[in-house]
Amino acid sequence: MKISTITVGPIDENCYIVYCDKHKTAIIVDPGDSSAKIIRHIDEAGLKPGMIITTHCHADHTGAVAKLTEYYEIPFFCHADDEWMLDNLEQKEAARYLGLAVPPKNDDALTDGELVDLCDDYSLKVVHTPGHTPGGICLLGHGILIVGDTLFKTSIGRSDLTGGNHALLLKSIRERLLTLPDDTVVYPGHGEPTTIGYEKEHNPFLRQTEGYS
Image (cartoon, rainbow, N blue to C red; front, side, top):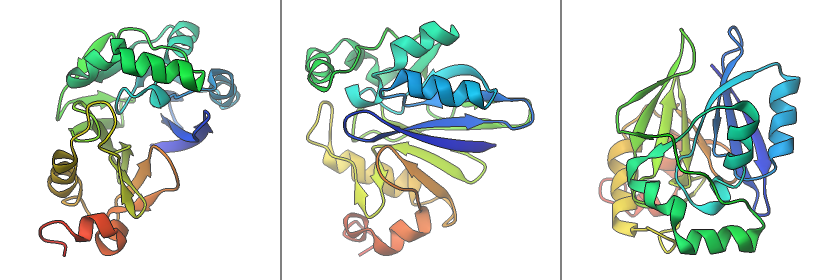
C-alpha cells in the first residue's frame, strides 16, 4: 500500500491517493478541489480509482467529489452521521464562498470498523472519530492513518465549525488514535505528516488531556 498527497484548494487541503502498486487500484480520499490536478496525477500514474471517501463532509474536503465521481464513474462514501452535511445550507454557502462545487449525495454510508478493500492484498479500516464533525472518520491501514481534520502536527481539529464538539473530539483522539502504535504515520487534512508517538510527546492540546499531562 502506498499513498500520494495532492495539496488542493484555496486553503491547502490534502487530498490523498491510496493505491496498490501491484494492482494499480486506488482510493481517492478527501478531494477538496482541483479535480483536473487530481485526474492528471492519477492518470499519469496509471491508477484505477474504485471509490471516493471523505473523512468528513466540510466543503473544503468535498469540492471535487462531483467531478471525480462523474469522470471515473465511481461511488462516493462518507460516514452516516455526516450525510446531512451534504445538503446543509451553511456548507453550501461555504462552498460558494471558497469557489467549490457542492458534492452529490453519497452512494452509501460507512460504519465504524468497516474494512474497505483497496485490492486483494490491502484494505483500510474505518475508525469513527466524531468531534470535528459528527461523522468524522479516520482510515487505518498498514502503519498509516489518514485523519482528516481530527488531528494535526502539534494541533487538533477545530470544533467551532458545523457539527463540532470539542470534548468529543478530544475523547476520540485519546481513545481511538493515541492507542495506536507510536510509529503509526499520521496524514492530516492540512499540513505535514506526523506520527502518533510524536503527537503524544509534543502536541500541547493532547498533553492537557487525561493521561497525557
